Structures are given as C-alpha cells and as structure tokens.
Image 1 (cartoon, rainbow, N blue to C red):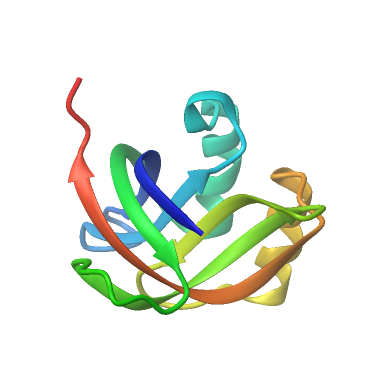
Image 2 (image 1 turned 30 degrees about the vertical axis):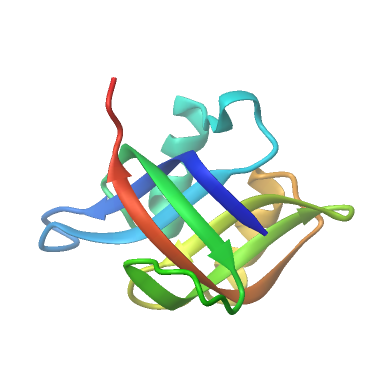
Length: 127
C-alpha cells in the first residue's frame, strides 16, 4: 500500500501529559479528502493520550520497501473495513493496548486492526 500527498493528523502531547512530542499519526484512507471530524478528534484525544492534533501531509508505504523515506520500519496499526484499509495509525512512542484498540475499532468503525510497519515522510500542509 503506497500513498502520496495524503492528509494526516499528528497527535501531540503538550503539558501536563507530555513535553510537546508527537505521539501518533492518523490517516483516514477511505474518506473524502481523508478528513477526520472535530468530534472524532475530540473522542480520540483521551484514548491516544494527546492534547491536540495538527494537520499535515504524509507520503508512506506499508511494509518493506527500497524507496527512500525519512522514517523507516516504524510500527503501525492498519484498521480494516472488509478487505480495504480504512485507517492507518502510526505510533511514535509506545504501542496501543487492547482496551485502546477496542475503543478505536468502535469509534472508527473498522472490523479489526492489524500490526505492520510503515515508511514515511511528513510534509507541512501548504494551504
């Protein structure tokens, strides 16, 4: 699975729960304009333990590749609807636990998540 110039959302941990680091990257693969709603982001914040989201652009390939990316072989979770990948959640620090995956499965309306690796480059979204 390869995507270029895809809208994504970076989840940030600001004080008091973090020091300003990026914790998660989420991309909605099957949605028009790859958007998450404000309500979804509000629901996802406590589950992923982030304080805010920023909108960025990402190029990525799931699985092994010979292509050049800034970040290589980073663990990720792919959320599936039938045979189509609906969401990709890239972990920056720690992995998800079973309770978080259960909540994400329900909220994002996917049938399951599989673990994989991803290679990616983030670009600032230019409006």
